[in-house]
Image 1 (cartoon, rainbow, N blue to C red):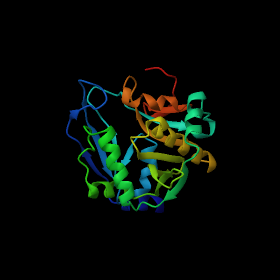
Image 2: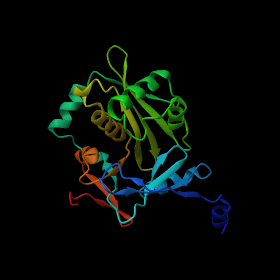
Image 3: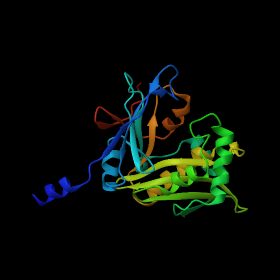
Length: 243
């Protein structure tokens, strides 16, 4: 009874339904999301993440697109992951980089790298108009345990950063940005590989990578990280490559 009373005392969840907009992944379709404010209930984050939600600042969201269920929440089985030849090559290419774990206190160095990344890779995307305050909010506004992983070359220059959440069952890669002029490094892929390494080092079973959309070129890279599971019909299932 005491536990039930505590549950009833939790403040109500704030939920919003977004307006419909053009889908960024499948041409001709519309996108719509349900978002939940967890700022007053941060302990609910992990449960919602296990139900396929993703975090942005104090909110977690999930697609509820009309007549479409193409977005599949994707998580990598970190302990069982073994890189193939191509992914191993990417790790070797970046063996000169040094990983450091930082707090969620954005620096000007990180912001300048973010600007270069957006201008070089996503100048026509939803984040193209983000200013310094937006960037700071993206990094700092987290109601749960979050850290930033920074990667520097031998000259001490920052070449990549990734924002990651800590969950009971692993890590969640929230957002990454990197030097767009160093395409040969495949830094986006490398940072995922290194987060998997981090999860393995700390005994974390899963790395959550957001949504996978079969047939979308923007999301195809996630299929390289397997074994993986997708969240379908209310439960996580091993990804079998179908769909």
